[in-house]
Length: 195
Image (tube, rainbow, N blue to C red; front, side, top):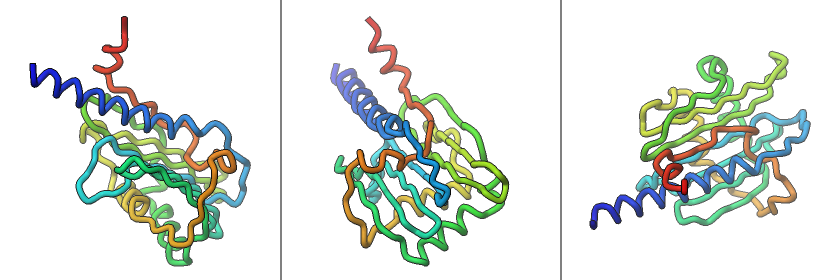
């Protein structure tokens, strides 16, 4: 019986985390036609990783370095910050997004979540190519690891320092995360919700 309760608790916790992640994606209904946009990026992890502070993060960055960021910490605290990146931060991000390996990625890469997952989303206007690069990658239970180029962007996202960031309200800027994205659903919890 003790094992059953522990299993139920872990599944309930995972479902709550998945719903929290989905709520960040669901916020993205409106996207302005900002021609100055460099990228919208997101990362989400259902697992609490020792030594990592960030559970979820979305960032919208303009070409001049202006940014808006929403991130949820492992403590459950949510931060909404806007500000201006340093020139070094802008150059580092531009370099990561400009690699051939990253530019070749596109589409939705989903999977079935049994225990844990991490996901990455990107929306990058590619003016030189006349379109927008969109990428959604789900690494469910470690079965579809991120490519190296995505790992580098995720690392940048998780360690981005918003040194001069000031708080903003969601209603001011509802378009921080990339549009669309993967809808996370843990199958056993979905089945438990049926009458």
